[in-house]
Image 1: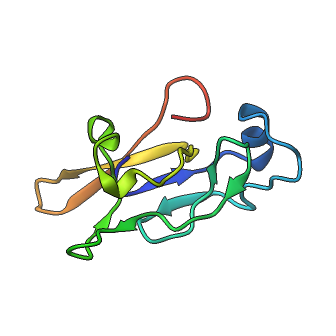
Image 2 (image 1 turned 135 degrees about the horizontal axis):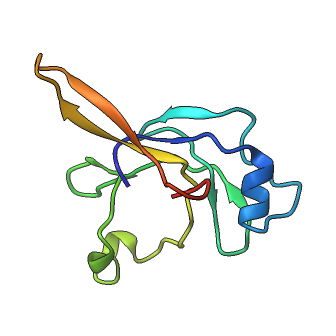
Length: 116
């Protein structure tokens, strides 16, 4: 996952795609700039929608960790007590330096389907 992403799919589409019960309202409006430290919708293995804050504080240096490498998950004590969840995303941002020295965001989205 990148440092910013968006979720623009309607709640009904998320409920259908992830086979959730109707009472699981995921979002009321589209969110086009979701950043670390915000509460984000995630779906756990029991198909419940939770809203944890995006990121984990490292226990030693207190830095915020927002990404995890799959190859390190099993060996890292930081992730040993966590549960797997899915964070629905419609797109994520990649940044490109412009010829004028400013970062320009590009929204990366799937060619087919509503989710990455």
